[in-house]
Image 1 (tube, rainbow, N blue to C red):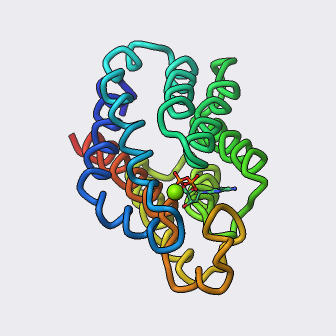
Image 2: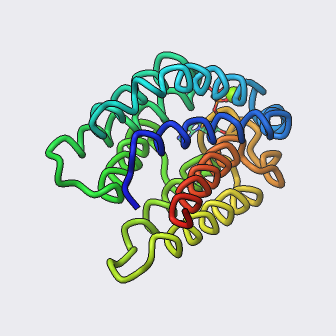
Length: 209
Ligand code: ADP
Ligand code: MG
């Protein structure tokens, strides 16, 4: 499968659509242990990313990641805006030489998010989805088919999201609740998982077609 500009456009549209579909659920999750604005923040960013998608998809990958990252930073707001922005800007930096794989760029992006958020796996955040996904991408060997990898990515994202339910929040607003954060899925983990699964489905469709 060749990554074409159309696939980037379809992926952004799919992320936008899945968040629209699950907006009320994500809003409720952030109301339970945060301040309730997470889905609105993400929707605001995705709306602009969707408007820019045709233009972004004409760029080389590092320039496209950078444009997406800067839009996340300026339009999403909240903790998640700066974290998603950091992910894509760091991916752009890592990919600049042109020889970096997607897995390497994504792993560098996730590392940059950890530094920015002063956070790591197990702290009930979006990183509980993004870190395991980065590991699965990196562990992929050349013999594995792309569709098998994408299915594994989806499963990993879902397990990561579910794992936040019984974690004690250590970062972000939910951490103020201490034990009361137990029993709730993290909103950022849910939105990240939804977007990753929607994008993986776009790529799976391309594999099949
Ligand atoms: P805010 O918390 O500023 O209202 P959002 O509601 O948009 O921002 O995003 C909240 C999400 O951001 C949380 O659900 C969590 O996944 C993530 N998050 C918050 N702080 C951190 C951090 N320090 N490191 C990683 N992720 C974080
Ligand atoms: Mg919030």
